[in-house]
Image (cartoon, rainbow, N blue to C red):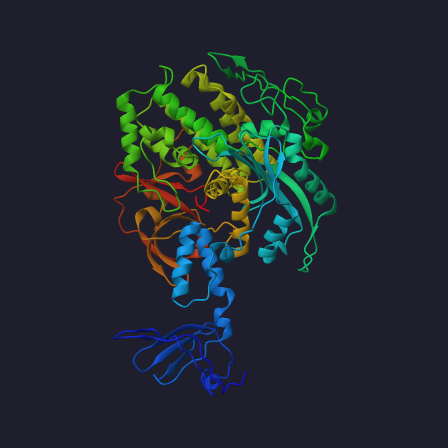
Length: 636
């Protein structure tokens, strides 16, 4: 187009005492020279302030001044897909309903914006989703390779440094409605720290009635990828070798996939050949003085454990491990299993461990007092034991690692408190992200867990050592096998993603198609987060100001400076005391008591690299209890 040519766009409609919003645009012969000869530009803001107009170039934010007689060209690319894509991304992430989005589009169109009339056009929703009848319900296979290629293409810089794709697979069921038995069984996959994606999804009134049919498409594709690898044709980063590292599931899902006895069977332990016994209408496990022989991969493959295995699982034909590749997920096993069981026994268990109403009230008051005092990284603040049946897995983890030792102190009997500390110390070691420290004390953590399980009947009663409690003696083996903390092999991120899938179902009509459409919309709008954002919130508030430094000292942030630098008060060891001495000195885990009356602390300017991890700082009597955080942000 000739630069001297004048073109009109939209009529000017709005005017007030301060601003005139330009909706009529024309070009001027020398407009390009006025912005430094840069040629066509994208308009970001155009406001006329009674004689002058600021035009911001989106690329370099340069500013032009125009008088009220001049006009600026609206380029054709002003109506490019940027606005549409941003609006689509907002609608997808905010879970805006179709009717509300249609109303918004209608309003914006009346204001002169060129947008689609219907939300389905904006979000590029598929017209139809083809599902098949399978396993007693509806089934849809989306693909493993296609999902991996999306993850790789969105994170090319990361995948240029690796050659092996170690996959974690999660399979679990989630009920969709309170008044119906309809449930969703997706196959989720993730690569290391990246967000899960859906490989396949099943929807029915019960779980899939055939594990062979349910896994057939997935196992066919994973077998091909393990043999041939995966290539990125659009990027010069070579071929990736595909490996299945772990199946992260709860106990019922592991039993379903491996075709073994359920967790309430006599021979249900997945790691050893122990036989349970019937006691008060339940199966319990007494480990005795000596541990039972462990199950082996070869023995499982040869179907040697006929008391444990129901039939041959299709995973074996695909060459997948059925012992070491199925870690014991600590979210279900420890948080929702053992910690919840302990608290239930304290509230309504046997007489030897049950607390009085007054003791329960004291514990609840202590927990309620800590509400609002946990760091911002925690999704939920402590709440009373009267809401125990509503607690989530993150709340049980919070009680185990942070608040439990504090609130139980001086309320429960000493032997119960020390018994609980053995679990806290052992899990703190297994969750420690520092490899050297974790590996050094791994055997100690294993022995603590064996002691916890072996002595639990004397503390909580004969019926306490259930399947979850017994399996605790094997969880340290997973840390040793994978060479990483339990934070890397748990179901927290998969449960969060399952919650998103559940929320994407808006009606009872064809739920599986709704899930598939929401997945396509997220991919089209490019709003799907491929990696988990790691944020450490720093504030001058007490709950968000305490950190453990790389030199092993604690520090409180007093001022935030530029370039991620902080003015901190560093605490010397003379101002710190141990919180407990049994089963080990709490200083081994950097759990200490800081005297609040300390004065004249040394102030030092520290950089972001000087910080090792954030510390939970909660009131303890007239002092503060400091506990290093062992997990990341509790939100995706």
